[in-house]
Length: 337
Image (cartoon, rainbow, N blue to C red; front, top):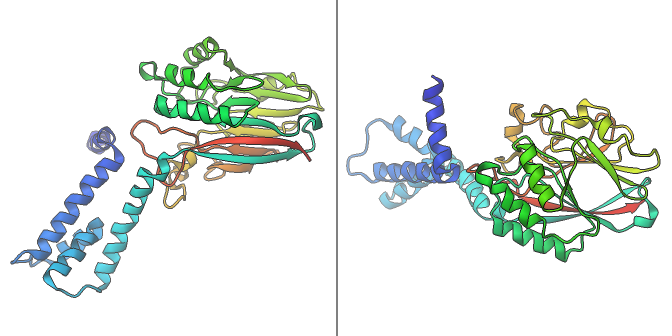
């Protein structure tokens, strides 16, 4: 049974989710059109009804136009809606969902050092198989935006050394205080960390350090593959410091104490990856996060009330498309207040 179910899924992902749907959509609508325009139409109207409701509404509509049948029947209208909705999603996936947006956020905290007002922190996560040229374009854009600090949230494509090219392009980003990162659930951490260090990027491995006076940066290991320890990562921070925690998976903020931390940056959820007009239905399965849509994207709070920002990330996981889940690079401008 598992083989019977799993084989079509493997074929779909090998071809591509969008490509597989477009093939199905073309076949269903072509068949619906042909059956509605045939000289001898099928006697079984239930088959035509099912075909229309199985994304075949466009074929049915144009078939009725061609044969001058009544157009505004409930079945035709419902079939058109069923056909148009997925096509809108496909169009979004092939256009806007492939354009990285740059999100500028002004973050204020009473603990932020007043002397560092205007400090700019860029956050990149979930690069996966982002093309190297696209990563080079991101590097050029962030350099143009005058970044003080760059943080990496993990999840690179490790297969065939793809991550090395991604890291190489990221290392070209000009910053004032350097580039730091953690590992994600798809990373082989010792290989990733070695590549990062070869390009002067500092891994955070349940560890932290002072970036500037009054500003402490910490990062934890991935919670699916290793043993994240928030207390160990932040042990060097002073009570008066602004402490920023970097964790690939935002769920850690619900499972370990975060009191004393001022901001947590995470990724992992891809904003739901494949959504219904932005509603992250996939996250409800519980296989990505244990907290439903709490950490889909944007700001939420930890169990201790600490702000947690979850980025949708910039890449795609192999042949799994983004659908109404735009990729993003986030830039925080920090202020006391």
